Length: 133
Image 1 (cartoon, rainbow, N blue to C red):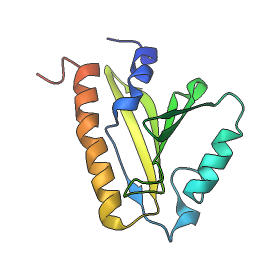
Image 2 (cartoon, rainbow, N blue to C red; image 1 turned 45 degrees about the vertical axis):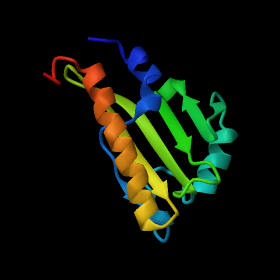
Image 3 (tube, rainbow, N blue to C red; image 1 turned 180 degrees about the vertical axis):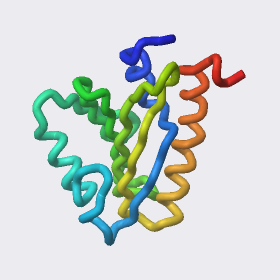
């Protein structure tokens, strides 16, 4: 089995478990911030966070807690949206747990998560080759 550190390196590809929230329920945000803007500001100020821009997406890595954040670029149909992904190990399987806060139209948010889920399955198969047979 691959170590979790290798799995974290692959985190940009996607996730396995996902849930999205629409604007209007910020108090119950599962990402830990009430809005996408608050998440971005809070994470940029967080000690140890590594911020990068990749193809217009703002990506923030918190290596100490195996967490990667992705924020949609301004022109993206699902903007503003924040996706938090955490590497987890359950038995011999490596999983990526994902939560999202999307403040765009419901259809754009659903499409964004569908795209991530498709990539997630590819990543899961590569991290758990015995399970994909």
